[in-house]
Length: 81
Image 1 (cartoon, rainbow, N blue to C red):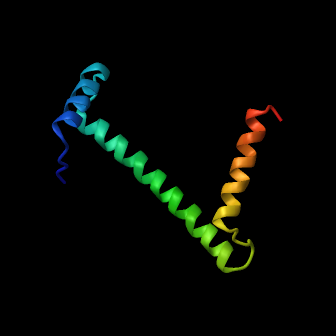
Image 2 (cartoon, rainbow, N blue to C red):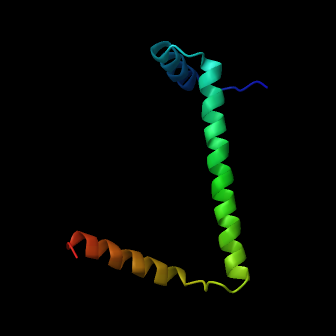
């Protein structure tokens, strides 16, 4: 497989390879493996949440209500309480 990146990204990769003593292909492989693991974990979480909603195990809240709760939580943190 061939991966194309911008010249800026290629320079960053080359700099990292030089400073770490690792081959650029190894750095890219590690980064891609980590990214795919993260995406897979997020996908599983989202699927689980969706199943919980569809199965009635949790109830959705209105978007405005969610923002209100977040604002209150943020206000409490700022006020030290």
